[in-house]
Image (cartoon, rainbow, N blue to C red):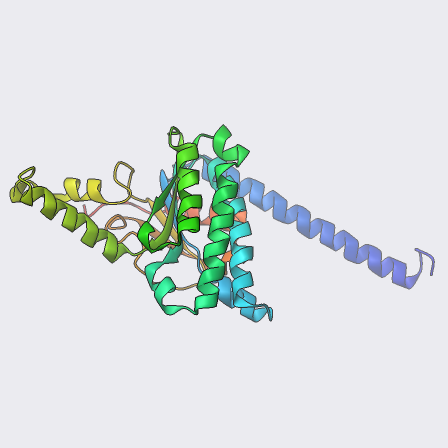
Length: 272
């Protein structure tokens, strides 16, 4: 049928509406970015990557495939974070509880994915051009040698950088982190290097995996769940929380911008 016919006219109208909608979305994203960049950018953002499995299940896909899509989205999100000038990002990728309670096949798939992406991260031109230091936080003794080796390669490849910091929380538990820090403090007391009365918040903070870095200003959790799940329990005492009702593989740049705008709109009193 000629373009001027009924079918062609309908197609033209649909195309025009789509162009208008896409253009409107991009305009909104651009305006939102301008607004966010005019305010204080959080120095440290933590992200709980939640909803990969449910995203896959709703699409009739194997659960493990949701983690692969989630890993792809994380690579994009890290670029967005760097572009906005956030100096430190901590991402919760795999907890100790996940490793102990989820099906073995799923955990093995996740670990292989982590190994693959760690090697990719070690050679990523953006990581090196932006001088991003990669750090593994968690109980690395729980990881298979090849996974631990890949993550440690990313650490070695970036150990001289200090412009940006990327913490990968893998085989991680906030309670386990606090116990480890308390044990180290006790060992210092036992050796005579420290008096019990010298143990204070500053010392304990220095003994955490994130010692030397600022506590997270903003923690984002996707999938609509409102619990911490053991993420940065010590460090998050005064963090601002933003819960997004979107599965991690669907996380968009506009979601990140909205989360930061929400953070900027809050009054941070730190108990005052």
